[in-house]
Image (tube, rainbow, N blue to C red):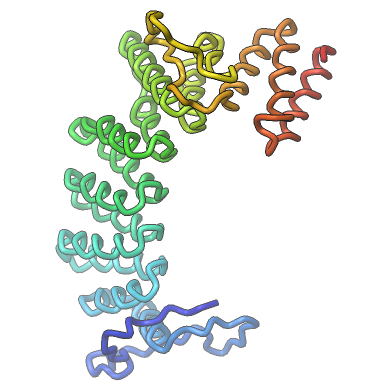
Length: 340
């Protein structure tokens, strides 16, 4: 296992060589122990963590402990104990937290896929009680990686924890922009579901129905644009499952996507509730075939034959990667109903 190393461009002075640390007795990691698979840390990291264990042993919380923990965190951003002790020290000595948040900006951008940097931000934001600037910072990090789980998780925590109307206000336009850039951004689709349906219970029936109608229209519009986008089909299913609306209500829409070619539109009036595939779309769409098979299966015994036919088309032609899964669905349906 590779060990953390210090920045080669920076002259490093070991804590063992610093006069102001002479009163601390370092505690080595493997004292009186012979590990079977020791980790060979860099000298800088070993020196810093030995002194960290020394200050933890005596319970010291001071400005120099903040310096020490920053050294460790820069060498190893995933050192949970250093992060936790750092936060405890900040609180114990009543250090100003706004400068710490500024430092956290740098550390978070440097290690956006490290859980500990985001957890530290949560602690700071909770203590500061001012979440307003955080969405802009979060968006900045997402520009570097629009699908980073930790960044999205932090955004959802921020919205839910503070639950302020001004924080929620621009989320849908924000998501719209991301999906305009990449309609297959599954993280943005997931966040849209969170914003639309998971904010909390909606006791206003009319408003809840309006949201379902809006989101169904949005999902179908995006499917029409890119029919083989599984994220949009999963979103459509999620809306129906959440609102307990039968899949069969969307059969007219989905049926357009299981044909081999896009039907010429001519002068027909466009059905806005059931937009057809865009011209040049690659059809048939495997997700639509699966959807229609589920519609037929849910209709009872009379629909099983149609469902089996669609599953066979997936197994043999349109989704051969999951061939064994479709064959399982067929066997299960036949065994249950006795219909082939």
